[in-house]
Length: 199
Ligand SMILES: C[S@@+](CC[C@H](N)C(=O)[O-])C[C@H]1O[C@@H](n2cnc3c(N)ncnc32)[C@H](O)[C@@H]1O
View 1 (cartoon, rainbow, N blue to C red):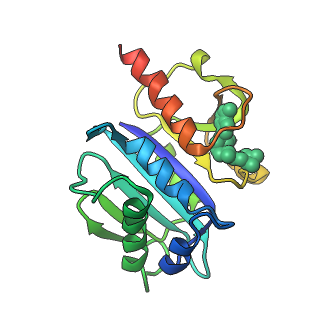
View 2 (view 1 turned 30 degrees about the horizontal axis):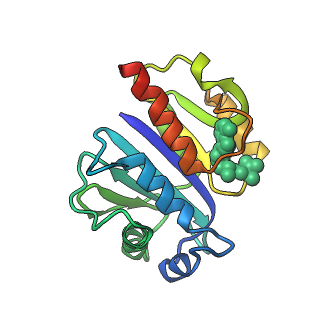
């Protein structure tokens, strides 16, 4: 299983605000692009991929939306509008939830009122964590075994204190070169690197 976590610091947890932010300051399109590149390939979708979108611009709790490629049924297309409609539906399903609750939205999609920090603590129990960072170890030099989990952000950098807590969880910093890429582009390159190793 390959796991990707997008810490979307600017993404609103209100579905209407999210949908209004495509091309806006919150860059809601980043969520759609990351989801698209993590899960879809031409004419199909990848098996064994889990994506967590963590939306953090909220009056109450962050929303963590989990997509499991093995369980997804018809997602209605892979354009921005279709993908963000799924995110919006999960946000609507999470209305009124208390802290750290979980709700199934539809096959392959669930939503939790869970912070990025709590999510990665849980993932660290059974996943090696890799935080994407231009100053990290080149991806080619990194050994991956088992359920690698890759951590990315939207256009807002990972806060220093979060990097420190990730260090304490044993997360390794991985680089894809000196050019600053979009999170969705990182996902493509990570898939490519791991695909090559599988032969
Ligand atoms: C657009 S970047 C974030 C930009 C943000 N202004 C910053 O300074 O971190 C989105 C995500 O991609 C990761 N990323 C971008 N380029 C990368 C590279 N060359 N190697 C590894 N990760 C990269 C970043 O670490 C971040 O998680």
